[in-house]
Image (cartoon, rainbow, N blue to C red; front, side, top):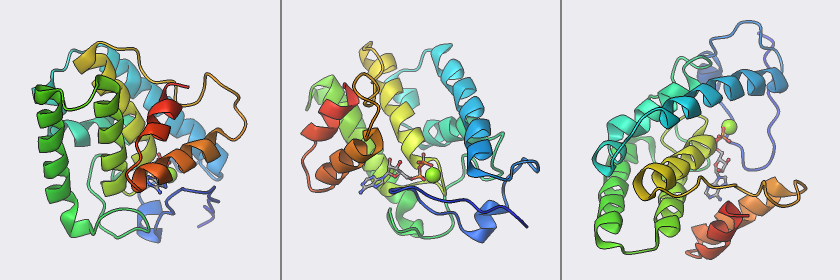
Length: 196
Ligand SMILES: Nc1ncnc2c1ncn2[C@@H]1O[C@H](COP(=O)(O)OP(=O)(O)O)[C@@H](O)[C@H]1O
Ligand SMILES: [Mg+2]
């Protein structure tokens, strides 16, 4: 079958069986795929804006999966399901559930104890979850929307701009540099990027 997808830096390649899960038969290029995904994601954003979620709802495996499902269910059969293969980013596929549970517990603890300022809680959560890499694809977008939902619903703050407020050139590169700094334990660059 003729679906060849090319990847930019920092993108997780799909396995053949994951490409199998593509729901739209007419998609033949990455650009078309992006467009379908984007529409689906916009609907998911609308869904989040029409609801009120507290920390008890948000910081659960069910919500994490449900949000991914809302974002990608028009595009991929495996939307909302943990990945079944290992990737170049992320924990071993068998550790996803347990690592996510630890993160959810940490997140609740940070919120209750005000361990960090609100932005930092959202951004630390975002970096931890994208590092776990729960899903076969869409982890970056899902983690950013989650940070937005944490900021908006838990802390009543505006959503993040993710580099869009400054020059659009090199946004992806600046984003990946900030993620790599966070990998080394420096969260500040990602915090600044998210509000730039
Ligand atoms: N070194 C890294 N540390 C943490 N996260 C990373 C790193 N490199 C890439 N990522 C994240 O992984 C994402 C790619 O995973 P993927 O599942 O393809 O998400 P998406 O399809 O939304 O881009 C990137 O968008 C980025 O958010
Ligand atoms: Mg991807």
